[in-house]
Length: 171
Image (tube, one colour):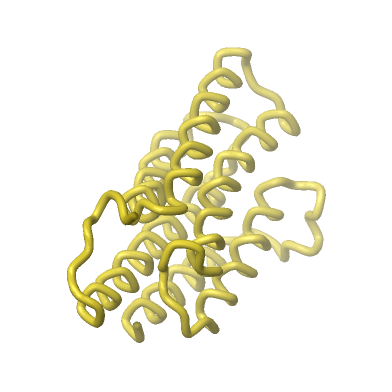
């Protein structure tokens, strides 16, 4: 669990290091609101002693992040503008991550894989669209990889302590 906390702490610091300004000065910008939201969730996860069992507060927190990540993209597009095609792409992404967030309630794989796949989503947007700042994509990649690693390490420590469980579904 200490390795998981260390990884999440480093990822959080890396994400905060690329901020071009203090979030409280930009409360009308969805990217900054996303950073504030993640910082709150990361602080709660870092303080928690619990695992990632179905129904746990930690699992719900990560599920909320899975849901919120694509919402920031859609909100940025609506705030800063973008094409109808790009809106369609973002809505498909929103649907995919909402599904992963829903599945993550019971599926370990959806929980960590959803976070890891979002890093690829961020990388695909980096420098390609005008409505997502490059600093946000960079910070989000750090967050996604760090949170996916955190989840995997916590799940792994639970498996070692309690015996091996199925990776995709736990009933």
